[in-house]
Amino acid sequence: MSKGKNVLKWRHIPVILAFIFLFLFILFEVSGLITLERINSLVRESGSFAAVLIILFLIIDLILPMPSTVLMTFSGAFYGTFMGTLINITGSLLASLAGFVITRKLGKRWSFLDNQEKQSMNEWFRKWGEGILILSKMIPIASETMACFAGLTRISLSHFIILSLIGIIPVSVYYAYFGSISESFSEWLLPLFFGIAIPIIVWSILKR
Image (cartoon, rainbow, N blue to C red; front, side):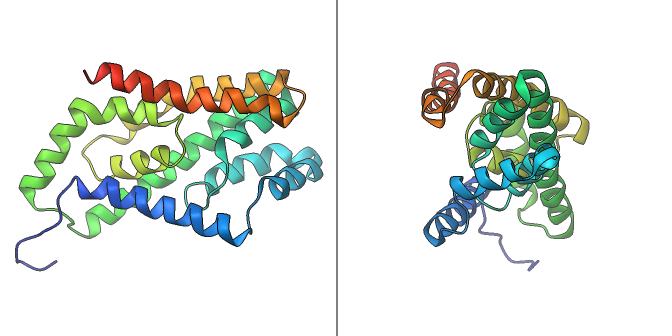
């Protein structure tokens, strides 16, 4: 990096990450390359490999706009609450780890921020970021954004895994359960809505 003043502020990073994920989501939605119908068909036709395919799709969701909440509901519909939960946890955790490791390696290779900005970012993350990381696991785009952002902070890998699991496990159970008791996709809409709304409401209350 240049020795000149670094104009990038740490607060820009999560915004940039979220914009990238949102752009990819819109791009693939408009292109029609990835649709719920195609994903549903692929999962149903994969037979005994459905679990592997769901996990793979959840990992790919890091860079492509896979409907992760719908996929987690699929796992419950196909495998029941218990196995569906295990599948969801595996795929979601691997996706989070991938984002974390990629940005951590990039952060070590290139200095995006000056020392003052890094210190400010780490102080903020210790105070607020860990809670947001947990709550983000229920919100599409926010989950990927926070996993990648965490990789640029000083949080240890083990602590990141623990926080991620705290957020991932209840989400995995939630969607697997509703998938197991629902008979049609239309019955998933309300659980999907509450799954996104609840963490936003909780964070709004805690931030006061």
